[in-house]
Image (cartoon, rainbow, N blue to C red; front, top):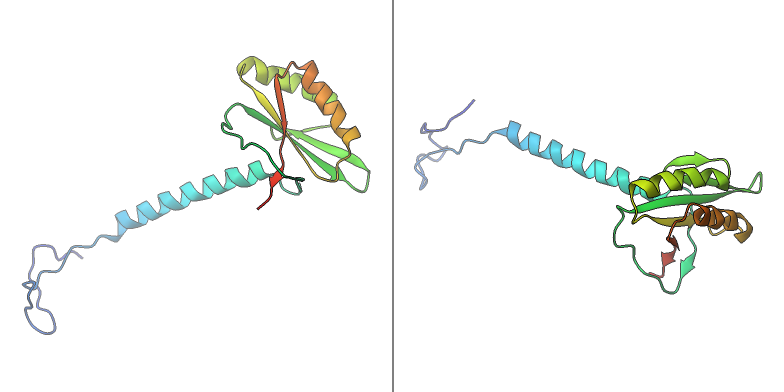
Length: 153
């Protein structure tokens, strides 16, 4: 129900405003709120996926923040305590072995010559499990490889 342009009497009578009531529409306000809700939910989902569930990064005294996430392939390495093996995910694809990384990285490097690899390894992963990943990056001719760490807060 819209009251725009009509005069209404307030309970105290016609006040200083002259008794005009503003027209307030709820539907456009709800539309804006839903758009904002969807926007923030999608951004949060992307950040959660990027963070990698279950990976406890090692702490470092120093380090550089990554500036551009557009040219990055992230390799998540978590440790399976039960089997004492490293579990790999490259670009959100599970990999059975480090040798499976080579074709994935080569395909991404063909599409993006400025490609960098960021290895997000859990602090419990042994270096013996990281060495084949570095060799796969070398075989794929990746020019820049970095390790993700937690800064001191």
